[in-house]
Length: 603
Image 1 (tube, rainbow, N blue to C red):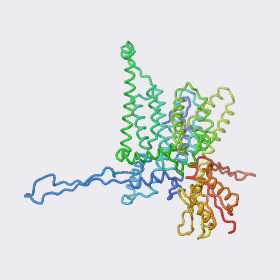
Image 2: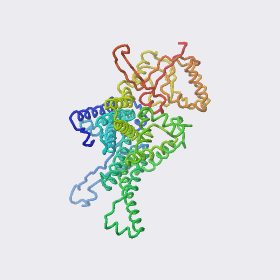
Image 3: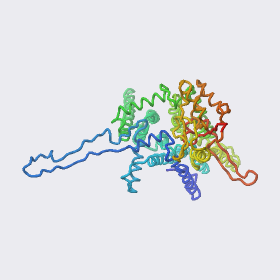
Image 4: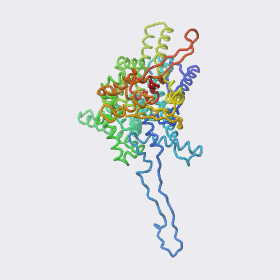
């Protein structure tokens, strides 16, 4: 898959060995503790998709034969065969249309193969099996995305003396991008969408270099577009890139036809117009065909599909503000993503190098311009939406990594041209690479350790007496404590979201505070999001933190990305954490929320 210019001498044994080791490292980062959090549904989108997978089934029509008992009976062949009615609307209907059926069916196929191998076909699909199948898909998609990202880097530098030290360093940056590690551990659509978009970009660069024919490009990108749309309908925007590439492509006409057509400007215009129209029409038809093939119930169950899409559109555009979108009220488009998303999913240095690459890489390089265009056509419309979840930006994360890597590679080439000392250049390059990959290395710690909710639950069972009255918060995917059902606590899951508008809740809160022995703040979802227009809510959390309510914080559990080193000498053990609690909430609350526990001071 990876082709390197012959000048690099990459295929020599030491460098091939390095590439194999890096591939093993890539697999490790994507698959480590893939079963984190199970059997609990830590991620709401994953939970919904898993539930859809577990209920997939199809009752195929049965055929029975009723042969005549004697020759004297009517010899009517239509009475011999009975075929039961086949209900296509219920056959493999996921009853869930926020996403397409492609990842659901793929997960179902993986589980079916697993059950067939281990002779478990008589057992129903469990939640754990559904989650692991979807996470397996995400991990594989993330691995493929890494390879194609690296391939794009080598394609763009194919005419350069691509120094061999750059390739493994580029691969390391791709491997240790925080977003790739996180999304490969979520059984959701993000890893698939990242893979599909980077694959479309890769095909577009091949086509721009005349490395594939137009027919090959149209069919391949249309196929990818079809299964992307069958994964999530919002990926329709991916089609903008291949459509623009096809429109801008100049067809080379045979010399005889060119001579004939150039005699009439009208004939030449009509020929090119219908040629472009044919390209776009064929692309659209192939994409629609595969969309229907891989997500058929979007058409079969059209009303359910349209109803779900209508709701999702209202939430995304802010026509309907749900409790889980209140964090976006008053948020500033583009600035929000720049401040709350990109620095965390990429790491600050990778984000900075992306910006520098976007601005200062050659504007005459058509392939770099394809990357710029691919970024803008996706980023701008999604950045302007009311809902600004991290996952809305996911498809362009690998693209941003590629641009950052290209900038570093170009910087390396510039330093070489300055005739500086090679050892100095290599040292600076390696240091920059280490800085870039540090957040990703740290992010691995989240999956190398037990989930923070398990850690907190274990502490609760050991330190909080049974029958304690605990005031907690609603709308968390999983409530704590978890794991020991015979431990008895009275946990109140209180609706703080509507505290300022519901007088009954205000009265209930006063009673709960009088009776509560402990208060749990299981994540940042409420206190960090609802800042404006919620004076009572903000006063509650302010009074809680400063002790005015009569409660003292006795424990805090976090699982921030962390690097631990055992060093000789005075330092001995070195630990550095990346506090990312201020990132857009979905970046932290699903796999590493911060849990705070308060105890009544009088106890």
